Length: 241
Ligand SMILES: [Zn+2]
Image (cartoon, rainbow, N blue to C red; front, side, top):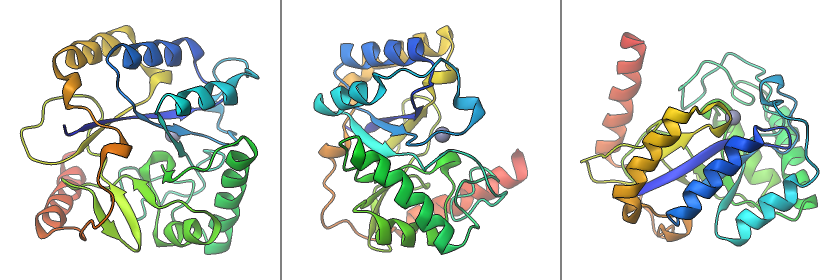
């Protein structure tokens, strides 16, 4: 087992039809993904359907069937053009902001989760971007211990947190050893991407794990191989985009 699915941008105003389609698909193959839930969405791009009051109850049901509920920033509004320590994009809700501003954001998002009955243990930064102050803010304001993101083969330990790498934007077979997270955005998926995902799951569903299956204790720090891989990845992006 070595693949994980992460679904980004769940919120009251998501594209409900596509999210429910994704839920049914993953249930069919008994896959328990990580979902990134926006606590206080203010991003216009995530205002797709009219808000549904049943949203948080729906998220609770997902949690009860074993889905991992991750904190996806606070309002999903990009404030800087900073890529931080995982510069997948040059835009961020967090990277580049002061520690106090970031603490305030984490506090607001975490509090909303608590009010809705959730104690998240995973943080998922919007646009994958965060910096060292984000990690400090998480430690000050929450009990979150796990970050989904960065480029590496295996989960590792860094700054007293556990990093579960996120490497690919869609499901595919990877012949390297490691734990590979496929990140999907159901709000913008078309019929073709659902069909592609289903044909992959049909053949490979037994290779999927959930965050609960990963041995999170006694992880080592990032290996030399993973450091090189991350360096090559970002070098490659810089020159070939
Ligand atoms: Zn997002």
